[in-house]
Amino acid sequence: MKTFIVGNWKMNFTVGESSIYLHKLLKRIKTARNLEVAVAPSLIALQPLSLQLDRKKIKLAAQNFYFRDFGAFTGEVSIAQLRGLVDYAIVGHSERRYIFHETDKDIRSKVAAAVRMGITPILCIGETANERDFGETEGVLKDQLLGGLQDVAKEDLDKVIIAYEPVWAISSVKDAKLATPDDIEKSVKIIRKSLEAKFGKETADKIPVLYGGSVNPHNAEAYLSITGVNGLLIGGASLIADQFDDIIEIAKKVIVK
Ligand code: 13P
Image 1 (cartoon, rainbow, N blue to C red):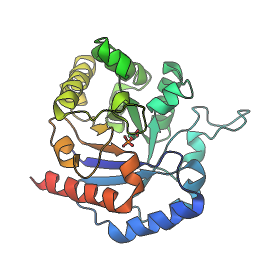
Image 2: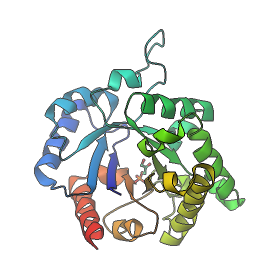
Image 3: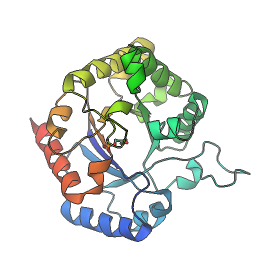
Image 4: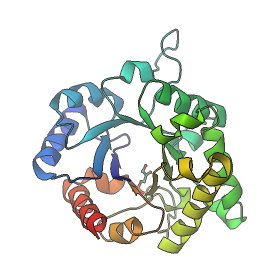
């Protein structure tokens, strides 16, 4: 299976800054076999960046979209409109779930819409600090995972990526804590077991599971070495070219190990 390094730029950089930053990354990054690098800039930067891009090096991901294709939905952008611009789309990020009150039904519809349009959804799941403290991690992960995949046909599940992002470990969250490799391994086991139980081992084994939450060049190797983890979804560190590139170099080393 490939290793994925995905940068989520969130609501950072103007279009001009995005373009300058991408230029820097393209000059610096040397990709490798079995390594897939993608960045998710702001929606308005996708069109210009797609023209500037060397897709052999870096692919584009959307941070968000609406699940209907066209119509009277003022202010929304559909995945159908993003076709040709992005290869991936982040769905169900905790910032969408908790700041913008996206429901499980919205998320399920978005995952299905992306698959229908041939764009790989990166379905984010993860428990909050409270849910973790109350011992609800397993239930939350199973609900978000199987709920999010509910409208995807079994034969399309190999077109989906899961990202485990414990909300309490995201760098911008108040009182964020660093997840230990043990914490992550436990949750990734829950995710892999749930996929296996629901869809069978052969299908489950084709689904990449990424980790996200305060990833930086110091912890990337440990996180990438966790059994069952196939890559990283990076927020803050993906905004700094040196750090993002360092993480890519670390991923290359881990892949050949
Ligand atoms: P940080 O890497 O800043 O913790 O963000 C993680 C994240 O939310 C990526 O989607």
